[in-house]
Length: 144
Image (cartoon, rainbow, N blue to C red; front, side):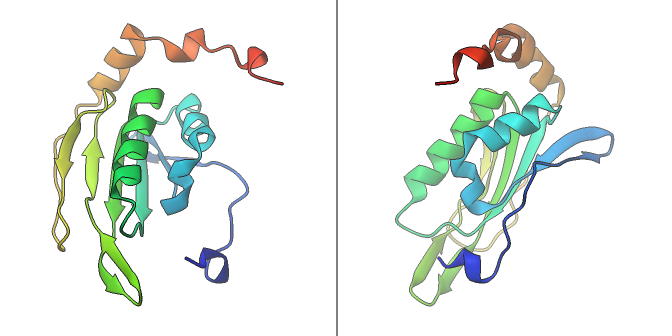
């Protein structure tokens, strides 16, 4: 979608505090890179914010990747996608809030709307204790 004409790539992952809670952010295409979300979660992020412009026909990719990032990093994913038509692109919306188990708490449709949902941040620690993926990782074994 010619992002390189309008955006400059970042050079590092960044977390920030939101009401004392560590959060991370990425944009659009970044959701296809699991390493970024993993880096944010390893640095304490309990939620990931993701504004995007995903067009049809990639709705299934959007839903699958958002769910995967939530499950594999045991964090909330809060994703906002564009709706409407711009040029030849038809954006499908489906903004969402996904919990650390991969359950969809809230999901928008294909029209402009406000999507809200309740987040229980104690669930992040519960999931991370129940399935300790961060403790059980073996990054030294993943190098080729």
